[in-house]
Image (tube, rainbow, N blue to C red):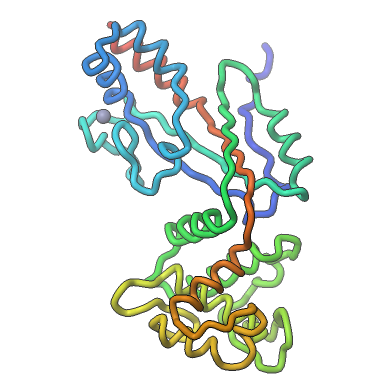
Length: 296
Ligand SMILES: [Zn+2]
């Protein structure tokens, strides 16, 4: 008997972690069939072939708050929030987003070529964005993973930022056993390990404070950072000390202008190509089994 075909899995070992984002959403097929049959008036058989061909948009796949027939749930046996349908009516769509760059061009082409071409199991969507938008999406993705009640998030966020800034370093090794991150006035640039602490040069430390502020800010009480809870005014006051703003080419004094220009400098300028790889395998399987029940 032939061995069962191996399930295809992406090999992401050639891509820096910071250039890869993952999204996951559930789609309710009971709702979907309802939209196609009741609202659009299609016969079940036509609805079935339309749904099978359906290619979700980037917005539907990645929106932080899903809209019908899409929904998000962490539960093991979720019910559709719109029609209460149980699990066998749900399909999961996993999406991988790769940021285009010269360094990853060859690896990306190889990955796209390796996707099984059969039955549109994978859908590839190419879009163009700008670095600023990508930076804020990166913050959104990171924020969704962070547990702000656990102070360890400050170290995790430091690491995420350093990884994004420099994908070539082995950050597993740098951060092994790190329990705290401190500012070092002795260092001119980069970082240094000492026991369980990671010391950052003042400028890099400020970059990290900015990222932590952006991740955790709320309108009233500011954001929490390695330097404690800071309002934007307190944060920019810190930034005015030393030559931090100078090195970022900032001469403004208004707190909002300073924030705006620092973000522009850290996020980078110009456009970037984005490649979304949508895994439709579960969707195709579920559409088939649901239709069998639906038609019966
Ligand atoms: Zn539903």
